[in-house]
Length: 351
Ligand code: PHE
Image (cartoon, rainbow, N blue to C red; front, side, top):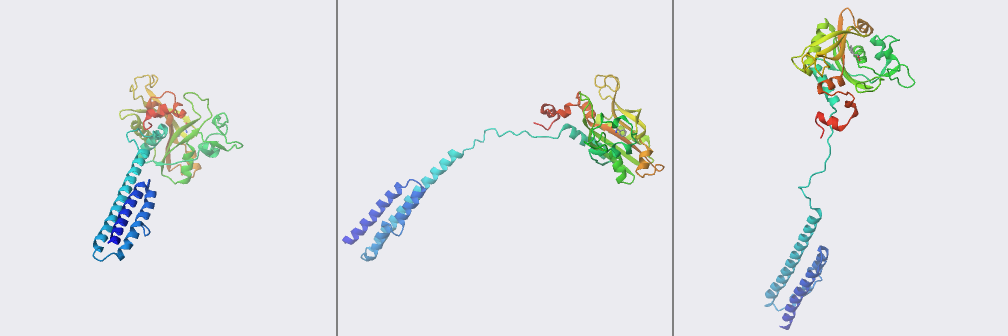
């Protein structure tokens, strides 16, 4: 009987001591240590259980039940303590990593397409819609393409280093002064018919002021086919001018001169603002000068091996900055190259 009492006392002691240890654990790690000491093989409970073997048979069920109850009570205490620690840890993490979703986000300015680039694409698109294909040529160009093949005489002033950037130490390589050499490169590479539009950067040595830049963008156009006439040139340019400035506008061609076209002309578009009456935008002219053009000189065709008896062509070259400043009402063209974000932002896209 006293053995049974001892056993009971052993279980009570195991429970008391176990609960104490569990309560004393101050974090998850210590709790795990306590669990091993309280429920492990060497724990007071296990030792007390071992004594069950020698208990009288009729007491065994009750004592066994008591052992199980102590075990469950300890397990429960551990589980509750663990939950407490985990809840504390979650609390701490919440406090540490709290994100205030109502705060404004980091501000990153978005870039956008430069207005000149965008306008160039839009202008090229108009010609693509008329059946022209995109062509390109190098900005660093041979004088033979930039001048000779374009019928520019050896003494022509545009060849002088005052007007043209030559690559250091060379007298046959320049920064192209116009996109017209792409005419030659295209005709050399393709048999007629050709219909191409060639946008690109050009360079001229120039006094820099509000209206003159030493770098600018041109769009070149070239059509060579059988039976091409000046009427075709005018029709294409009219469609172009109307697409850019308005459906109700007219154009006019004035005689001019370029070494590579014959006849040559300057094209004006009727002022979209005053319809040729004269206003501030057209400087009282009623018309706005837009581009140079003409019929391809047979000299060029012959040089690239086209039959000038069979083929004729027209070409034009227009300055993109000029169209930008006229259509956007921007006076000083150089504003497009200064890249002041406050200026560029007015063309949309930039925030
Ligand atoms: N290349 C000429 C210029 O830069 C423009 C032009 C192109 C004229 C094609 C006629 C034909 O001024």
